[in-house]
Length: 393
Image (tube, rainbow, N blue to C red; front, side, top):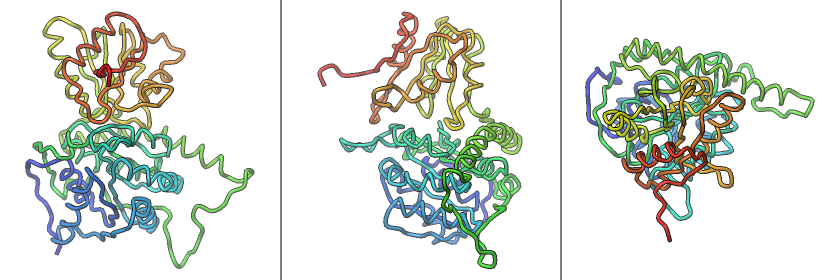
């Protein structure tokens, strides 16, 4: 008999919180390959299955590519499926990410953001997931362990919406969340069941009704129309995200504000845009600067895909300057978020934009670094800047 879970507060790491989210979502199939710092997620899930706390099948495979292939096959049968990875493991999945999205399968995957080598580096960096932004997956960047758990539950609701039907990856920063313990509220299983019904695919593998999946298409076939439909579905996901986060707030008393979170932006002269745990330090700095009389604020991007262009346009309107912090780099172009924000504001009366590359490879982004970003914006010299670079290295 599978044991259910009652609501309680616990101290747990981000990886434990993510595993608990997958358990509460009643995933029935898990396949993954170990990679630091993701490994403890699937280890915890394997332990839950062994202890009969989770009624699911765990399949061991020889690579991350195979893990996603197995997850895709399972989801095609109408089984709610899950996997997790990080860094080079995510790169190894790249081909299968396109297949899962193109098959319109609402898989949810956890990614622990870790730098890409060389040189080898196991610390936090968003380059791994930014490299996957064009695969057709929705992307959510979490700020806390509580949000990491809750996003698994919301993620399945959003992905399985009949107007969306796209996969979703949810991110946590390596070690800052994945291996750091925080208080987490674990909801009752019944409350989660009421919020997240069982998966009901309108199409699935059926031996009595054989059909092809991902069949061949000529240039005059439906290929281009199917890609447009994916794009349109990603646009429709915005409505689903707002609706699901609002319902989640009513059911669990935690409000994640849709695609972005605004922090003291109403009267701000200067605004920083950040994602993940960098936003936490940013909020602290902004509170300190507010106490000194500076009108500053912060926008935390939760969903990078679909990109919250409308929300950002509205939030930065009337500011004297907007800074965008990137924990990734598109070589030869700049920060990925900076490029997206610039595109979103094209053709509008947008404020001067300042791009800040910071924290690559897990380098600390300190209070002094945030203060420097605001000083740069006050100098009114828009451009892209590297923060905390050691001269001579």
